[in-house]
Length: 103
Image (cartoon, rainbow, N blue to C red; front, side, top):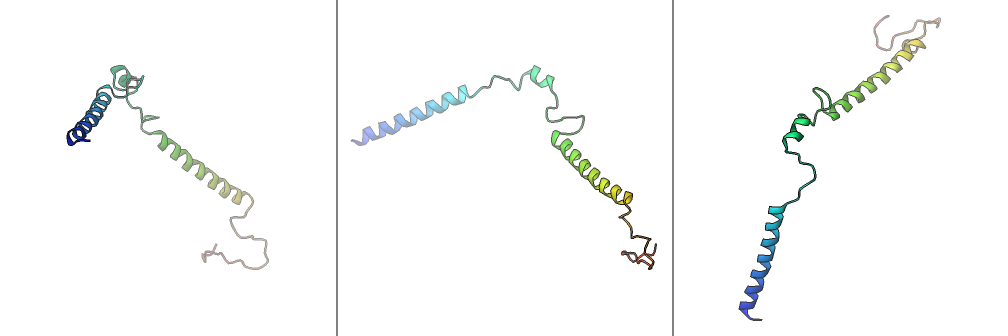
């Protein structure tokens, strides 16, 4: 192969690559939904917000925190119902508070 044919081969390959990338840039990939049309934008002005001020992840986080607090309050309520939140006063001996503070 001569030097000239090698150069022509390289130019042909580069031309093919340039033409293909040019077609991809001009044609691109278009979806069926037009996200930038006036109707698309005005139909949902704040697509990331689920409520008035929060995203869906913020709402999920608040629900998880609230559920956790509810369970902890339930166990505290059960402790008060069954009198396990304080030492028994039925003992004939003086009971010292674990915190060191007199009751």
